[in-house]
Image 1 (spheres, rainbow, N blue to C red):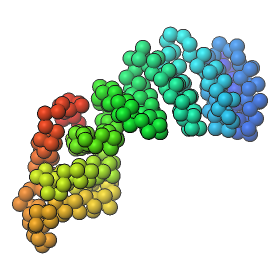
Image 2: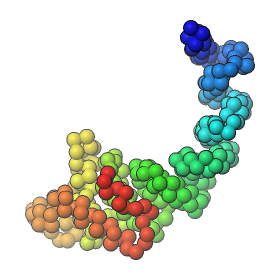
Image 3: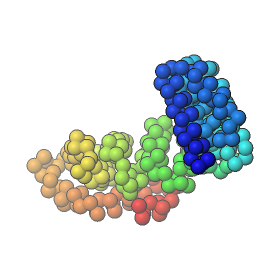
Length: 303
C-alpha cells in the first residue's frame, strides 16, 4: 500500500508541475521541485527538473534555463549514470544550437563525447559527431565537416545503421567532389539492399549518372536500378516517372530512336530486376576501382 501511495504522489507532483508550466508559472513549478528536493525518489526529481528545463529552454533565455540542466547533470554524477549525464549534456548542446550559439553547443557536444568514449557508446559518439559536423558546416569549415562525418561513418558501420550512413555518404559526395563517385557508389549499394525513401534513391542515382555522363557504359544499369528501387505501391510516382526519364536520356545519348527505346531496354535486359541489381553491384565495384570501401559489403547481403 505504501508503494501505491508513493506512486500516486509521484504522479500528482508531476501533474502539479505540468499544470504550473502550462500556465507559465515557473515559480509554482520551482516550489514543487523544492518540495521534493530531498525526496529519495531520484527519478521523480529528475523528471520534474527535466520538464522545467525543457519549458524554460523554450520560453526563457537559455542562461536562465541552463541552471536547471546543470542540476539534472549533477544528479547523474554517479559512475553508473554517466550515460544519462552524457545524454543531458548532448540535449543541452542541442538547445544552445537551436538558439544559434554555435560555440556553446560545440563545447557541450565535445564534452558529451568525452563521456561517451569512456562508456564506449559508439552510437552516442556518432550522434554527437554528426552534430559537430553540422557546426562545422555552419562555420563553413568543409574539411573539418568531412573529417567528422568520416569518423561518424566508421562508428555507424559498426552498428549497421545503414540509412544514417547513406545520408552521410551523400553529404560527403557534396563536400568532396573529387571523390563524389566513391561515396555515391557506396550509398547506392546500401540503398539497393535496404528500404529507403525514393527521393533519396533518385538523388543518388541522378547525381551518379550526372557525374559519369549519360553515355557512360555503367549509366544505363545505374539508371535502371533507380527505376527498380523506386517502383512500389508506396513510392512517390513523380520520382519514379523522373527516374524513367534518366534511362531514356541514356538511350538517346546512344542515338537510339525514340520508338526503339523500349526494345533497346529489353535487349539490354534493363527491365530485368535480378539482372540489373546483379550488374549494378559489378558496376559499382568497377567505378570505385581499387579504393577500399568504407564498409564490408557482405554485412549487407542478407538484409
